[in-house]
Length: 417
Image (cartoon, rainbow, N blue to C red; front, top):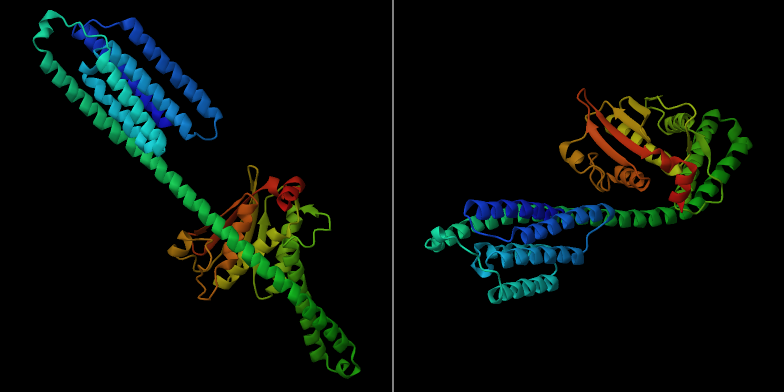
């Protein structure tokens, strides 16, 4: 529709110029009042179209058909007032037909062909002849050829410019549809993985509880109390089992199977500090530091999904580099920004190009890359985004941008629903 509005402005300007040249330059008498009224209607139509387009989310094929029909009617009126079929600009109908073929569905395009054909037929039967001055009467054929040349150049230029723009819009639409289909496929992949993880969590719950009971019994056995090394290993095993049970509970909670408890509100800095401490327990050999410039009173929901997302990013940074990791948090406008930086080798160019795609991993493992794939999709569900870049001084930075509204009580409740 914007292309049609721009074309209409050009049509108004071109008609003003042509009418001025013909009437005042060549001395050919034209009904200036009536032709000016047609131009005024086109200007009014453009202004209404601009106002309507601002309030409209999308433009239907019927609206485009109606706009093209108005343009055909205006062209027919101007041609009727200026010589009808003898006017060389009658070939401008082909521009309208071409636009209809590009923009409209087949049925409406053929209807517009029928309308333009009827207009041309009507002009051959009824029109206002041009009143040529005597000094042009003998040179009418040459003037007609000059008009045809100007009309051809105008037709060709407008077709190239506007059809190229329209095709660009159509390609952008197709690319957007392909991107949406890709997101839908990834969401389906997430659902299938979630069902698998939820089923596995249910299956693991019973054996983990059994192992925990057995370890507790071993801890109380008289024969093992004299073996401090073995008791220490039993304690470590108990911690590992409890960690596995917590992961299983987190999976079930994220799957929506343990929503009975009220959402926990905490300070953002407290959430991040506890998160880093919990991650250090699972990675005792890792070195991680964190800094925050967030408001000390900033409150968020202690979302388990967000915690798991950050665990995945930290795990990926540690496994890729094994070097010190830094977590930074700050507020940017209405967003919470979290940056995880490492001093490792960084991302390969092909990894950056397909960041967050499943099964794209630099770790050389089958099924690798799912961690970052889940990170990108969970953050996207929260209304945020994830980006990655290589640092000039070495290493990489993964940036998570999350709208604070999604981490508030109302936002999290809506997300859970």
